[in-house]
Each structure stands twice: as structure tokens, then as C-alpha cells.
Image (cartoon, rainbow, N blue to C red; front, side, top):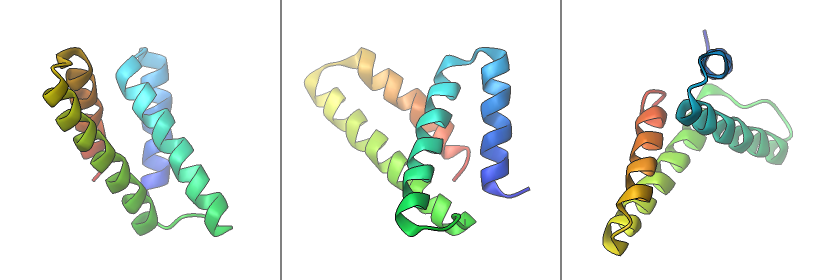
Length: 90
């Protein structure tokens, strides 16, 4: 099973399980992948999808750092949970 199929399958499972964090992350990931696919005018390879995943993870790490410095632990914890979901696919 390729990465795109795995994400789609896990998205559906998260939707059925009402796992809001995982559902939100996978929804954002699918949107980012679709945007990249539109830019390239062709379906993404697993390597290109991994680049999208890495970019999303980097954004979460930067947000965690900024929220930590700002003392916003509630937002930092949310970003850490999202990052843990993304790391499952990297």
C-alpha cells in the first residue's frame, strides 16, 4: 500500500472513530498534498508526498518552539499532538 492510500484509509478510520486531532491533521495533509499535485500537474510520488509531510512537520516544530517561547502551552501541546501524528507517516 502506498503512502497516499494509507493516508486516505487512516483518514476514513479517524473520521469513523471521531478522532478530532488525527482527522484534522490528515485533512490538512491531504489538502497540502492536493495543492502540491496541482502545482506539478500530475499525481504525487511517495517521495514527493514525503516532502510534503516533512514540510508540514517542520511547520509544527517551528510553531512548537514559538508557542513555547510565548508561554502558550495550550497551543504548544496541540501542535505536539499534531506533530506526533505526522511523524507516524515519515
